[in-house]
Image (tube, rainbow, N blue to C red; front, top):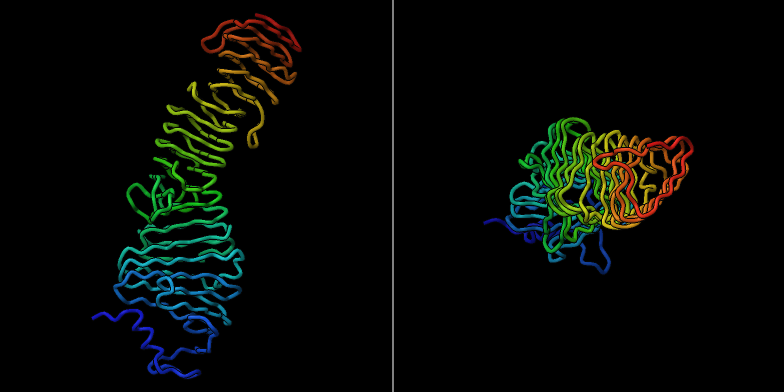
Length: 447
C-alpha cells in the first residue's frame, strides 16, 4: 500500500533529537532547530535544499512564498500537513519539487526583488498525473520558454534567465506580472489565443494548434506579449485570436510574427483596458475590438475587417493597403504612416492627431468617411484625399500637403494646403460637393 505523505514526513522525523542525523540519511549541514509558536516542520540550513518529494498518489498542493532574502514559507495541502520556513545560508540555493503521482499543483510566488529568489532556481518535475505550475508575480517581467517536448520548458524572471524549469506539466498559469512574453520553440508557428476558465478565474490561453508545446494561461498581467520570432526563429507564422474578451484582467495584448508569409486573424472578440498591438504580414479583424486606449496595426500587406474597432486611438503602420470601412468603427484619434492606400470610416467625430509614435497621416491615397466632425491637430500628407460623410470637415493646418482633393459631404468643408492643390478625382469621388467650401492654398489651385 502506498504510504501517505503525512505518514512519510512523520516517520522521517519521529524520534529525532536536535542535532541528530536521521538514520540512513546523509544530509550535509542539515540542522533541525526549535520553532516558535508556528506549525512548522524545520529550519534547514545547507548549500542545496533537498528535493521535496511527493511519492504518493494524492493530489498535492505545494505553495512556496518568499518571506525575505533566502527565506520561504512552504505550505503543503493548505496547511493540513505542514507549513515550513526554509532559511538558505549557502550558495547556490535551489528548490526541486518532484510531484510523483496524482494531479499536483505548485503555487510559486515570485518576490518583487529577484535577489530574494533562490540563486539556483526552482525545478518542478510534474511526473505522473496532470500537474500545474501556478506562477504569481509581484510586478515582475517574465518570459515563457516552452520546449518542443510538450510539458517541458523554462521561465525567465526579470534578469534571471532560467529561473524556473519544469517537466511534465499540463499547463502553466501566469498572473501578476508587469510584462509576460510568450515564445514558441517552432519555426513555422500556428498559434491560438482563446478564452479559458481556470478554476473560477477567467484567463486567455496561448497554445500551439497541434499541441506541440505546453499551453500557458494568463490573467491579471499588465502586458501580455506573444512573439513568434524569439525562440524558434522567424518562419511563416499564423496566429488566430479566437477570443480574449472574458474577464481575464490582462490590460495590454501585443502580438508579433516578424517577417515572412505571416498572418494574424482575429476571429473572436478582444476586450482590453489598455493597448492592442498587432504586427504581421496581413491582419484580418473578424472579431470586434473593444480597446480602452490605443490600437496599433502594423502590416506588410493588407489590413481588412468584418467587425468594428472601438478605441481611443488608432495607429496604422506598414505597407497596407488598409481598408477599415465599417460604419460602426468608433475611434477618437487616427494616425497613419503607410506606403499603401488608406480607407477608414468612423461612426462619429474623428481627429487626425498623434497616436503612439505616429503623428498625422502619410499615405499615397487617403479616404476618410465620418458620421460627425472631422478635425485635425496633425497634418495630412498624401497624393490624393477623398472626404466622405456628414462633416463638418475642418482641416485647416498650413502644413497639409495633398496633391488632389475630392469630397462628397453633407456638411461644410474647410481645407488648407501648403502648396499647389488640384480639385479632381480620388477613389470613386470627383470634384467637391459640400454645403459650404473654404479652400486656402499656398500655391496654385486648379481643377
